Amino acid sequence: MSKLFEPLAVKGITLPNRFVRSATVENLGRQGLVTDSLELLYRELARGEVGLIVTGGLFPEREGQLFPGQLGAHSDETIAGLKRLTQAVHNYVGKIAAQLLHSGWNCRPQVTGSRPKGPSALVNPHSRLQVRGLSTDEIEQLVIAFARSARRTREVAFISLGKLSVRLSSRTA
Image (cartoon, rainbow, N blue to C red; front, side):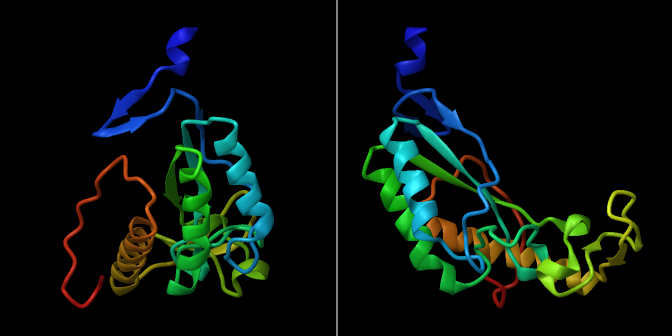
């Protein structure tokens, strides 16, 4: 049991202990932005000495949003709030990682304002909604959206536990 309280090195990052709060849907954002309630939740998790906190899925573009209260990393407008989250956790020596998540065929038009999209045109058997298949150009744009979201999370001091190698042209990120 005492190992739970010992530091752990993962990919060159030392966690203060082995307690991890996995990505969880909080639904406390507003229009993709951090709210005081969400910042308080993360502060309390860090104050409780959770060594690593993984955010709920941050959508990389509006069309990838699943819930109305979901947090985004889709625009530069999100940077200030995301910085508040990382600072709240770092004030208690915790670490925080961002999960980037596009909800694809699970998205709902009443949240995104558009039809769900995916790699192929088909009907989602759960929602029964028609999914719009992506073109090659749209797939490239989605890769770019993920790259820009990753840049934003790195800019505000989320830690990186993995590497995504994607070749992007100079006009993208």
